[in-house]
Image (cartoon, rainbow, N blue to C red):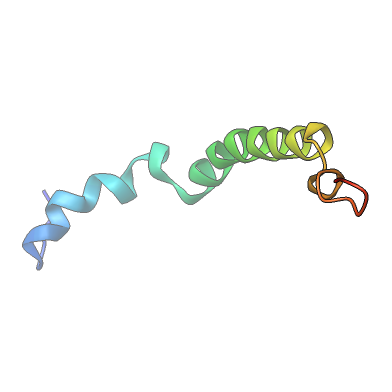
Length: 60
């Protein structure tokens, strides 16, 4: 058993010792959500009606 100087270090040790919480795993798990968000924003940008069409000079 390791001797911890800081009492909170023992409680937080699982975050740094487990492979699930490594930096590489966190970065890899971020990309599916980022990719889906980028695709959604691209689709919305391409399919949204243009705001300038409503405020044309000959509108009224």
